[in-house]
Length: 582
Image (cartoon, rainbow, N blue to C red; front, side):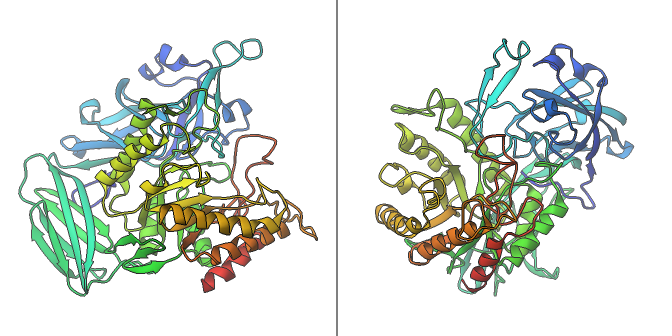
């Protein structure tokens, strides 16, 4: 799916800003009363993009389970009336039903990837009413996974729902990323796929263009960063050869511009020439070993929740550079396209992860059943992988696809399930390694051999052997060696951390103190340094973030090296120095 761009042919209208908003009083009220048939009544102001949960001081809205409704007017310019028009949502969490002038035009399931619909048949020149019903409800067929139940009518209003989920971040909901309306010619460039390779000093750009509608052959030109012509070709598929290619390198990005003209349409795609491979002990970018330094992080901030905030994204990148990081994992869902574009420009490496999180701990029915897989969960998992690939396939920053986080890979049927998703992803993309992030032990795991890297989440001396810092080094080194002997794959420490209250100081160190976090990481890092097959470390996590209320969480998860408002804790300085040398 191509990102909307504006040029002499294509036009883009942003529909961000203040929308009308209303929460249902009972589940399905808006559909029963046909709120889409007329202007929304009894509404409040709601910003887009943003989560709706923390905008007001209404607890019932923050904790709402069910549908909410958004609405705004959309003005169609007169000079657009004979053009193809596409309405595109960057993400709506987790379910969306879209209406234009009272007519349903689109539905989408999945809260972290874009969807779009052609709207020319449903609009007129001038004002049009756009209505979006949004649900945060999750069930066994969703990613992330949840269980939706009827609330006990003895204690809750009749028909009220309760949502139970085990993923450790707040279930923020709403229209989280930009809404755009854009135009193309009737015959248009629908899709582009780019794969790159390196042969000596020559860069190879394998391209495929999909054109919808009858048009002339594609004209392809490749421009360097100064706009100078490097290569050109004709046809919808082929190879461009780039002599003395400037490679896209870690923290030293170089982007070419792939310029495509097909009939009246014109699209320009930034690309980077680079390769990603693995050995038994290393991750290689452009044939050179790379040690991943960075974080798992979250799209999370005060008031806006998971709503796109480009100023915050830019600040986060500055903090990543300050601490000498080179990478991050999109735990536990795809991040915004704007975040990926910044990674392309700045040379950060991204492990791109789908929201297969919070599965298999507590469900009444396991996802993995004896001899087969759960069909609904698997189908949506595959759909999400396809949508992620279609969105992010051309980003040079994306070096690894992460297919799940902390599934219980010892369950009956786990192997069959993972074979399905691995085969699906490899059929889509043969240029990037695949990773499964696990908190399982090697003796029980059944799927590690399917993947190119092993991502391990370990919290020794926090969730296990709490406050026993001396246990970290022997346990971790022993376990890492067992994993490597079993799989023959490089190991990455994808999560390790300890909750820390900023400003809480204790000598000797105690849990939740900054001193404990520092000593905790020193012991973990000592183990990582003694295992030559470890290819990276991502402490959990970049910054504190919101979670559901619970006795083990005080105002959210406090494992960040930075506070939620992006101030460093003591451990941040340990990693700043460590990563300047490693």
